[in-house]
Structure formats: structure tokens, C-alpha cells
Amino acid sequence: MSEIKSLDQYSKINPMYWIRRMYLWVLSLAETSFASPALFGLAFIEAIIFPIPPDVLLLAMGLSKPKRVFLFAGICLLGSVLGGIVGYYVGQNVWASTQEFFYTYIPGFTEEKFLKVQGLYQNNAFWALFVAGFTPIPFKIFTITAGVAQIPISTFLFAATIGRGMRFFLVATCVHFFGDKAKEIIEAHFDKITILFTILLLGGFALLKFLH
Image (cartoon, rainbow, N blue to C red; front, side, top):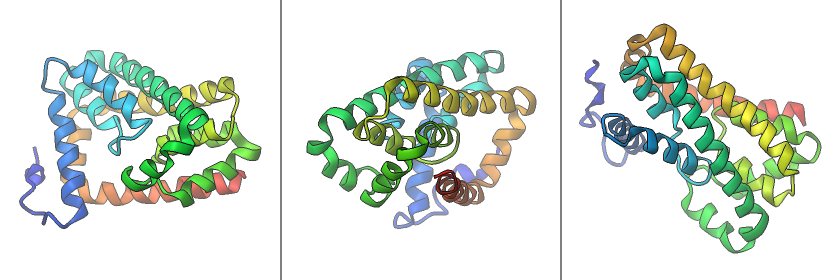
């Protein structure tokens, strides 16, 4: 295992320090007796407020118990969709009184992105939700904005389930075929993967703009 797990190489004023620290904390959950509930809970809150995607814990759990990786993917999907429903109802019912909290305290949740997503929903609600569910675009922005925009709940559930399902089961498939090699690559190239993740994030928004 790569020594990049250490935080010593980062200054605390470096954003990578805090990203890495949260990453390591999430990984540590895989070694506990309540890993499956933690996976469900992480997927649930990531769809509303949490900045670290559940894929990290899904990967770690899958590598520790590869025969159960597709079950873990199912747990992840269930938690994410249910969390998405909560986000949807936050947007639909209490957004006026909670929006300042999200803009101020939730990483990646800005008024500019909220308004952008709200515009994308006007003509392509299904595709906007599907792309958000499958790509690194922060899912929480789309779940809450879907409620604000009054997207039909049936459309929301269908698109979110397909997008999130494809994403989590793709991770499970990679673990099934590549095993520890996948984790070694992440550990050895964490900074580069974070940058790639950001590029994919921007690419996802560009794709949504094209679809719109």
C-alpha cells in the first residue's frame, strides 16, 4: 500500500489536506462492524449535504469482501435514492427557509450552480438528473433543485435510480475484475485523481449545457 495515506505531506491550509482527511475517515469506516449501515448512511447524506461521495467506502468494502461487492452497491443505491427523496422534499417544502444554510455551509452548493441547474430542468429534467446521478456532479444540488423546480417525483425517482445505479454498479464491477489494483492506483495517484474528478465535474456541467 502506498505511503500517500499519510497527511504529513500536506499543510493544513492546503484544501487537499481536508479532502484527504475526510477520504481517510471514510475509508476507516470499512474496518468497523457497522460498515454496511455506514455505507447506507453515507450514501443517504451525500445526496443532501455531505461532500465525500459514497463510492470511496463502497470501494473499500468491496475490496475487503469482494463476494459481497454487488450487495454493497445495492445498499449504496438504496441509501442514495432515499437521501435524494429527502433532498427533493427539502427543495419542495422548506427551501425558502434553508437556502442560506446550503449556500453558506455546504461545499460546492452555490447560488450560481443552483440557478444553473434550475434552468437545466426546464427542458431536460430526466437527462439532467441522469447525468448528475452518474457523473461526479454534486448530486445534492440536483436533488434539492428538483424539488424547488417541482419536477414530477416519478421522473426524479426513475432518472436518479438509473443514474446512481449505473454509477455504483460500475464501481462494483471494477472491484470485481480489478480488485486490489484499483485501490493501489487510487492511493498512488490520489492528487491526480482529485484533479481528474474536478475535470469530470466540469465536463458533466458542460454536457448538461449541451443537452439543454
